[in-house]
Image (cartoon, rainbow, N blue to C red; front, side):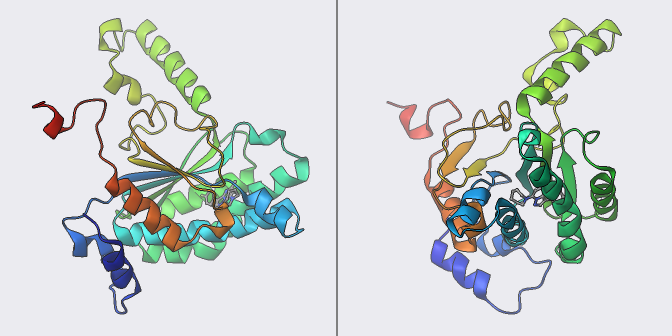
Length: 267
Ligand code: V07
């Protein structure tokens, strides 16, 4: 079992090799392989400070860097962040325009640091509607980090889970028509291969900040057995300690996968 104090001490210890995972010092600990986060509360954070909403988005961007590097140091393998949903296009034009500039700004400032941490940048969502300068910045980062084998930092951008599932169904029908697949071949594992997350395991832990208790069209299929942690903390206030607390809570939960825990099987 991971001990929070031990984690903190190791985290604050000087002289950690940048490629060394903190988790290696806790080989008995259970670090989630895949963590997914709904980064909510940026607008509310700004409103509380009488700032424009975009100030909250900008502050939230800095938290992405902090949590991604911590997750990498802890040995998390995939971090999926809900950056922009298919519904977010309905927001005011100036806000959408600002949001679409954030990937370029983020990568312009932090790509060297991501490289130093051996982090691979990925994106899931439909690229076509995204402005070309944003697409270019993301493609460049994906290309430059493609050989990194540390954390996968997977941004869900112009992503919606029902849309993802619908496209999976369409492609399965298409493959069936072309004789590439038969009805009997369509198992859960095969279906998963038609989703944007085909290269990743399902998330072990999903965190949503800012007190909303909804999934908001995020990874509906993939989160079937995932542990959920909801916190009232607004994303721009989400700290390293909050992330460590979430991991600690995750490790304290018993995972059942819909079956019985071993000690209950004898009852
Ligand atoms: C966005 C900051 C985080 C809080 C949530 C909304 C605002 C980082 C990115 C990003 C995306 C792709 C990429 C590199 C960085 C981002 C959007 C919004 C649209 F390759 N933060 N962030 N993209 N916010």
